[in-house]
Image (cartoon, rainbow, N blue to C red):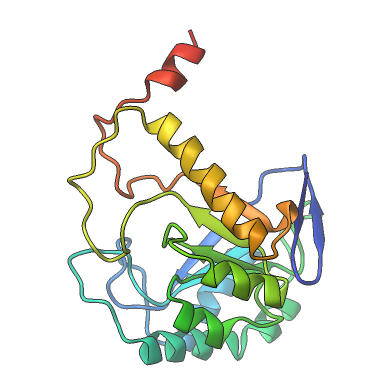
Length: 218
């Protein structure tokens, strides 16, 4: 299996990739977000030094009890990091020989209006939590040769979906990913440019049924 980024091909099996998360916002779940781009870049540097293969940046918290920020503000926050990222990436030494170096950069965003403005050669993965409602982000990724992470969810991000219930979550997820992978490939992405994410805690509840998965493990 291969993950193909704009500049590299990463072969698996290998040691699992370690992702460090940098929140360029002031309302993240973890409470470690910052609106200071210098602090965000130093967080990324420290995470690489501690073994991160991928740095994932996001400018907007996924919290549903906060209003969405504007497209212009999200682009501004992301660009404040991206402008200096290549220097941090290239000058920071890996923790060991198994670590991917230079580190990869993932951007967590979902609005096509933002994606269109920030995708470029310094980005190795688009981490899209929108559940791919249409093919716009997939087409943009194909245009820039950037792999796309498709996350399982329902409805628009930044909106609570705690009312959702699943009769069989695993079957629903399999059907979901079949549909979304077809959309992504039709938009021009290759299998080596698609990553899937079960979206833990997104439109899922702890009592949702997973009977197909459970029965297959008996």
